[in-house]
Length: 380
Image (cartoon, rainbow, N blue to C red; front, side, top):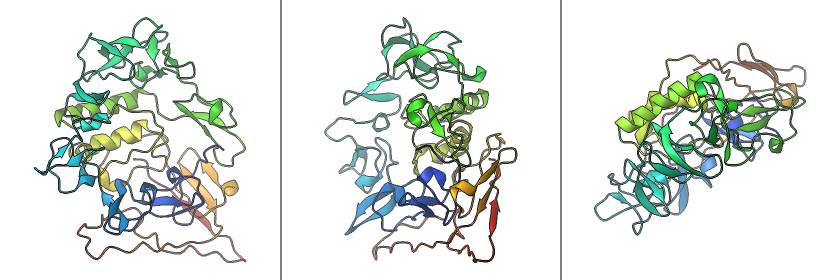
């Protein structure tokens, strides 16, 4: 099954959360509905609004502002700590039994390797792909083309034909080059060629492409998960520089294969909100195909990638106008959602999320008329 190119509001058909506009989620993989706010009862993370996670609370699980406090940061509850860290007796987030499970759990300038936090590797030093992380602005770069042993070299420095590891940031993206993963961990820098016909994702590069349907599922082609271009390279560099300046944790995982769920209280959104939004918009095609939530930051750059929203519709009747990013949907029904109840002792304040404020409005359809819903989402 390929991914339908559509962004839905209340009542729209969907196959995943990525097909619903900011402030909405895909209920039962069928209908876009209002995402649950902080304090609402939930079953899993997918039900919660951007940046919230479904956390055990009292007798129910609730959407909480969670997983944002770094190593050594002040905390009150375990769920506030990044990764698997817990809130210790000094009310600081610390490693469980001194072991880490992810890079973000380590202090600034370190990464997690085999359960222990290690210093990031310096320029020209030996490294192993993919487990080692080099100090920014360097990356573990392929050397001989035969093994995963490499050296820390400047990011984006590899040119066409150079040996590379299948990762983001080794090849010169400003010129449109990346390192394919279809041949395994080692390849060579080459142009990205979207538009290859496909039936499903198996016909595309396993790491960098997805089989996309377009408007009516009749023309399926491989489309890049990431915009490999100069704008992405520039905005990513600004994002990383801001993280370093503010000593923010960094995961080193950029594949464009899953929407980041950063808490609004996280270091990157607190100190680098604008840079983060610009990075998301410039690089991550499949994480935020419907746009980034407006309240997490502002990006002054107007990007050329169209992002559009459709109301309740049948996939087969959606027409996309790529020039101005407008989607026209033929109305097919209506839907409402009743948010889950809040706990009596809940002390968390609901997030005031702009997107979806009017999502409880019904979109009515009569047998004698067809309502054409045209909603355009301005480019960020």
